[in-house]
Image (cartoon, rainbow, N blue to C red; front, side):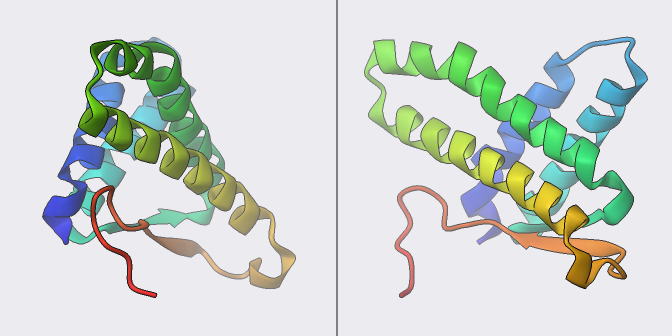
Length: 130
C-alpha cells in the first residue's frame, strides 16, 4: 500500500521544497508537508496534533492551489491522462484533508483529543473495496 502513495508523498515534498520564504508560518506549514509525506509513504496514513491542524490544513490547501493553477494545465495541454488523473486525485484529496483538519480541530465532541489520524483514500487507478 505504501508504494501506492509514493507519487502523493513526492508531490508534497516537491511543494514543500519549492516554497521558499522568510515567513515563519509558511516554513512551519512546509515542515508539516515534509513530515506528512514521510508518514504517507510508509503507511498511507498520517497523524497531526490538534495545535497543528490549522497550519497543516493551510498547507494542504496551498498544495491544491499550486497544482490546480500551475501543474494541471500543463498536464492537460500535454494530453497526459495518467498525470491528469493523479493530479486531480491529489488536488481533491488535499482539499478534503484540509477541510477535515479544520473540522476535527473545531469539533466540540472530540475537543479532548490531542492528535488525529488520517487515512488516505484509494490511490488513483486502484480498485476500492465496497
